[in-house]
Length: 259
Ligand SMILES: [Fe+2]
Image 1 (tube, rainbow, N blue to C red):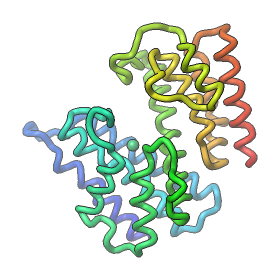
Image 2: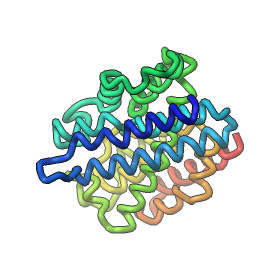
Image 3: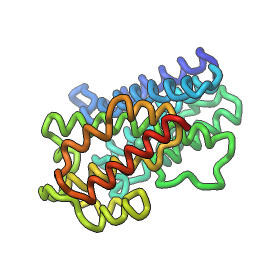
Image 4: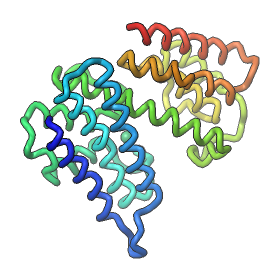
């Protein structure tokens, strides 16, 4: 994708939320937050793609995926008033549908179009299926890394501001981590949503994400910005289960930086 094509996609994305203005002439705050998230993720995509040495064409494609990956969020919020997929729709699948219906990528070659659409649809899946087109795979991996980098920052922002519970409506006020969740992370390296009962559980889930990072520059960003260490401060101290999860995550980050 060349620079002009990328600019065309960015312009489409920036215009898209306009149609969700309410009767008061405003775009809902939650949608503005999604637009800002997409802008930052696009920046992370560009950064990772550039750092791993991709050529300008694929770097532009990676950035475009960052802009577009959450485009399904706008109609999800408009129709259902939530960003919670299990109670509404799969926002990755919705994103693909919006991009196709709007003909956003019509001017691109088929392989680039497929890579973008596959990445949008897979960015929020638990795993990337083995059947994924090998040409799409590097892009699907990249958007998942970039999205995580921004979510790490978003969660930390809420922790530092004391508003984390706003991000997690309905979660228990308990300040301990649940045993089943710690067991699951220690065993499988990752956690399932249904085991997340408390804020510490949610933070440990974030820590466990390092087992699902794909590219060295992402690991380096996690390491340089001390993303794991700063979450540690918000977890119960003197808990051997938590210490062991943190230590194993830090080890994976250190190894990932040099891979
Ligand atoms: Fe998303």
